[in-house]
Length: 467
Image (tube, rainbow, N blue to C red; front, side, top):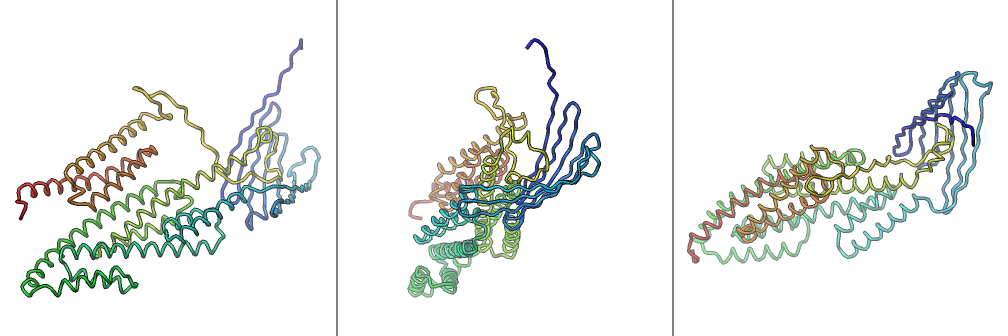
């Protein structure tokens, strides 16, 4: 107590890169009289049954050694044995020690983390089965896709997902045709209405399409020859107007799908885990664009709307994947003492694969009230721009509502309401770059609808009520 003792200085640093079935690490240890640098890599085969390791260590006093190892891991219902073997071979005559063999046997009891995830996947699969029996195919498809993330080896589940995707796409196409047929029928364009209903009946026995076709044929029989002549002229004009409107609407749908793809492409998680799905959607978008150039506006619009929904689902799926990976990594972290005492490239199994948790940003006060999560001036400026863009979009929507846009153009008004809801979700998530990009894509559509509403209101005010 009266004297003193100088504690030795010790410095330790390390880095690791974890991927799907393996991990690579590099460690540096420095004390007053010793320095050591070690690196190693580990990879698991056959669904994490057989593991292989290789490491290399170097230090002062001529230390240089190479290590290699194998692991055999078996997983039963409630216990798991593992056998590890390591071979250590010094490449220099350090302390007169020759090659060493190390053998380790370990037993683990209890349900592993993978078992809990598999149980969750089976629960999602059961939820999807219930939704499918109720006839809610979209809800069933969403549950099946979430279950597939934890049950990648379930081939029956993958087949169901492919079947439901095709079924949902077909149902959306039929609904689009029915909507077009009704619009043609209301405007008196009976020939185009018959063609659309016949196209539906060629694909399936649809009762609604058959009833509407019978109603159109009955209406055509009641028309006189003079009415038919005048009606044919009106049909040509309506067909041209409908063609132009369809081209404009399909162009808007293509632009919305492109914005959704750009948002998904900017996500690092989507590119890392769902790159194949993103590439598939980009190819489909090119096909939709080609259809639009060839004049197939209806098919291009239907494909573009489906693409936008799929791209948004990719972003949500990547976010769920990131959350699950962070939780898996947090559950596999070891104690500080274990991390300090463990030598690099030792034959014990490496921690489960996962991303290192990010350091939380320090909250700081924002001038004028509130807090921000460590934003730079550029980020704060972008945040204000995003809030302003959202406010402008809401203001335009209120102006359109005052101009009776919902009565004059119900379909376009409803579509813009859905876009505002998506913009509100992005704003709540503080994804400022996505909010600005999304809002700038919406402004031309909203300004165009506002101008159409103003013109419609002027005409209704000038013309007599019995015109």
